[in-house]
Image (tube, rainbow, N blue to C red; front, side):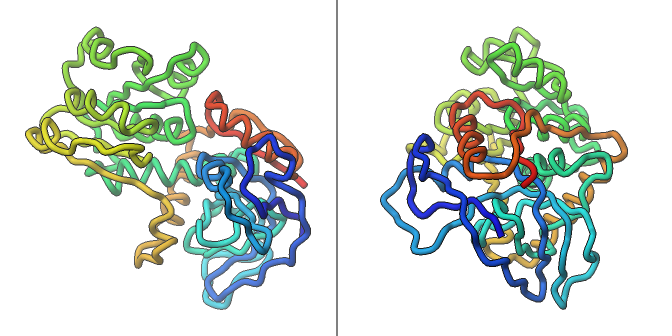
Length: 338
């Protein structure tokens, strides 16, 4: 099968950073599906794992953690799927990725993709949707049904992939959503996703929130720089509020006051935790993707695909990585077709 892989970890402008290769079609285990991949999308985890380092792989390493495609074979212990099913998923960081014509993936992490979306639009969703849903509704103490009624939520980096779906999920749950974005086009995108207010993260969040009538916010999800916003969020969050984080600190942060004084809940999300550690509830990821597919088909949520490159090859994936590393992408960038 065709695949895009690496053996050395190089700057993305190096033609050898990602290369076209031919690999054997993977064998599947008892709980796996063999999926013919039709579209993939890129995420910061892809660029982080590919970033320059001295390691050298003895065998080509295939990245990619979002995919949509068609089931070609099912393992002996799999139920709920059959050959020909159209599916989407984010996969498992410990296994070969989706940047290949075929991928073996644990069926418990997979769902039938939304009927209203094609493969490309479906591939934009899984990783960021799982991240946003788990953060808001599994890590933080809110219900997806009316859990935000009467509450305010600040979403830092609202125009990125996670922010784009988090705004929608939070708005549907009843939150008053304030998103941050700094450019006219990203501000417009946040409003299109459902944010009632948009403020500029390059300026004082406190001053802008006060101008909107918010002395405090009940909750915040920081999808950007954990250290940069740590002190200000501690002051902004209401007593017994909650903050959700997805980016590890680059330097130590002070966990004491005002976080301790206010009893602020601090919640970490890493969507690969369930598949990586084979937790008893890892099938929750497939179930939540199925729920989101239903909400999209019912018109309650919308896709977040912004642009599509094609076909899936090393040149286009290098371009996708380059754009993502620039920090200027909006929503999700997809690469589709072979």
